[in-house]
Image 1 (cartoon, rainbow, N blue to C red):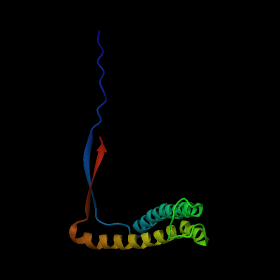
Image 2 (spheres, rainbow, N blue to C red):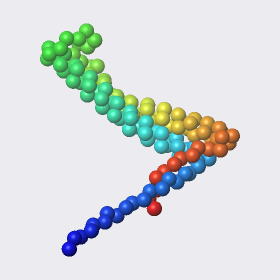
Image 3 (cartoon, rainbow, N blue to C red):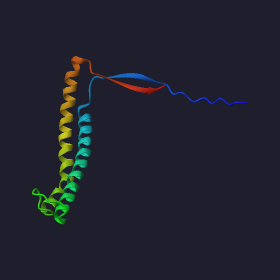
Image 4 (cartoon, helix red, strand yellow):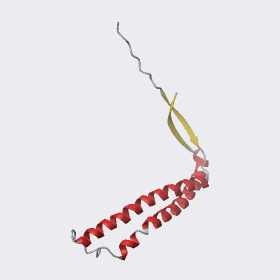
Length: 121
């Protein structure tokens, strides 16, 4: 006697949603948080990248005319861990506010924006 195994077939369909307006403050906050994370990532890369480069110059493993090695500049570079997330989040918030305002203004004439999603039936 043979056994027949059937796999469950999952069916997806395409569903379209239309966005006619964005909450200006909501979108600005979202962009601010995204800017915070991007600024934090770039601040980490800048700070620790500079530390590694300055350490290698101080040890004499590489030669550079750009940096004297470990110095007060290395310590100041760690200010990027606070400064870059702060600057990026503020600029992200302001840019998000402008983007949402412009989207709401322009979408009056162009009927918003269509988004298509795959949904499980």
